[in-house]
View 1 (tube, rainbow, N blue to C red):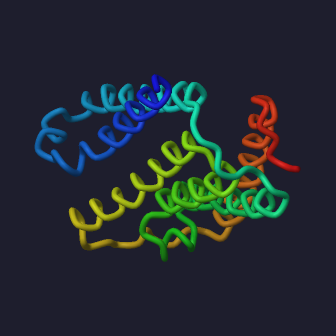
View 2: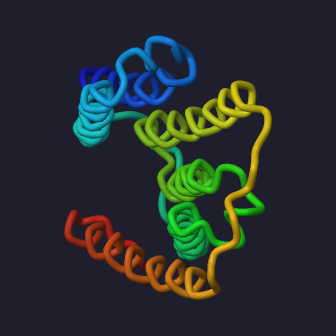
Length: 184
């Protein structure tokens, strides 16, 4: 049970740190640039607690990895990393999609739920999926008008693709180093 408590506390810190700006805009504005440091520490603490809690949590196992779901997961992960790159590079897709980074989190969470059918995964990945959905709703309500970023040179598209492939390779290597094979 302790693992789940730590995991849920990590999710709460992550969600609360992100929602703070939208749910308490006056308070966030009063803190100014100095407010970024505590929020960053809260978010980092949330990530650390999520990792520790996830690794500690034991729960019911419903399904596991299957070659077909692993292949789908890997394609979804490639898409997720690309959406993160699109968000940073402000490519053509970022001019059509309001929240590519939150879209990336949603795809990432769904991909991981596909191959991790245990209770701890439902809490972690399902919780982050719920947070990303709620974050989009809160942002859209707080800021209903959206202006797409200006067009960028075509080289940004290629940079986003190259960055996606490099980051994806690093993620795969980290998964293998931690004992979670990404393929097979």
